[in-house]
Image (cartoon, rainbow, N blue to C red; front, side, top):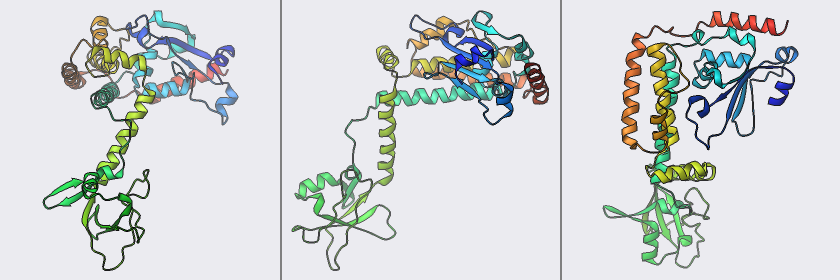
Length: 352
């Protein structure tokens, strides 16, 4: 089923403009995001082909089945609460039955965890973005020998430097593990290649050192340490970095580069917005989707504030949220029994 089929079959219950245009934070380059609620035909709802949501390829149009929508409202999901609290001028269609669901049914102290918790994830995302910009990774991937060292007295030497100094070939090295010493190996060298050692690594793409059969009586020439933990971490960060490069929004990335603050300004803006909304919910018992501080938030998006200054602002907001949650008159959690009764009543009317 597609979004257009939902509309053609008369299954649409609610549709609104969401995102920056709902927050009042849109600029000339902003996309139009659409969110909606639909219900399934009776046979499909009671059968095996239940669909929770439908979206387009770019995910800027997402529509939730009524039951899934109410389930997420009960969890105080920030994006879903914002749909229900959409400003009147952002609502494109509303079936009369949707009047059964009002925001007061759902707002609760859970907002402290859902809004602030999501904001915390955005802070982590922005920090990771900053790290990637400040610490770019070379395209040429390091290999196992880059994490291997030769012990020399009380020090160590990178194995590649050691091989060069000795005029040794890594292919003629043989390694033998040493019991009870993780990552430590005895290294043997076959000048004439008569033993056919496997080398430090068997091939350039290997993810571990190679072990060779060593003839009894052979004398080791050195001891090698392979820092496998550092290698594993590097591989993880290398993949994350180049996946990020491949998938990043280039226009947004160049915009962040232009402001020169080395953080994802859009994510930080949404962090501050979410925390401000959470504060208002717990203080006033209301969810205001359209933001009254457009200029401040757009300044953050434009990179006009320092990263550390923004983190202090976020910490202050989280501290105030902690204070308001203890004083708030909001329900601790939504009344699921009451909400379920309303949902069943809506289904009965829809399938009558």
